[in-house]
Image 1 (tube, rainbow, N blue to C red):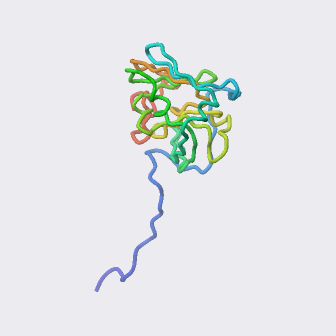
Image 2 (cartoon, rainbow, N blue to C red):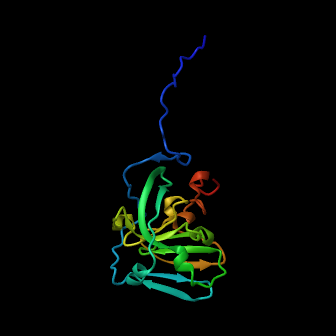
Image 3 (cartoon, rainbow, N blue to C red):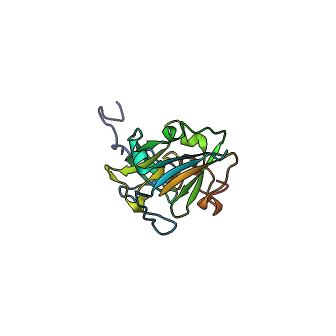
Length: 199
């Protein structure tokens, strides 16, 4: 005689999504900033990629909006331990913006209106992994979440997705940005819990 009755499945299992270690799921969108929120006019906004050879590539807001647009749906993970799944964005792939840039650089330093910076390997901005986004959940990106435009690099902790982005400086040597000089990890892989230097 069997110990378990036919058809008995035990307690139902919850279908919890897979989250990076140490993260919890949130339905809201917390606002975290290191300083005051810049208010940037679309008339003066521009995005500039400066190559290591001194060349510059510039896009006004109108020129950015005229480029091919993509609509990534991605999970985002903040170093403060919240994760938000299935977020919907619209913007321009960094592959599109970097396509005409002649560079031998391996790193980028993102610059934001308001003075914020963060460093990223250039390979992490290519291959369909990163965007300059201007729309969140079907509406213009609010200023408190980085509007009019921010970086979106969802495979890294969210501080790497610089708010109020205004450009990239391409570099042959890595240069830490704002949070990295304060002790945060240079790379910031949430699946490896790279929160702080030494992790």
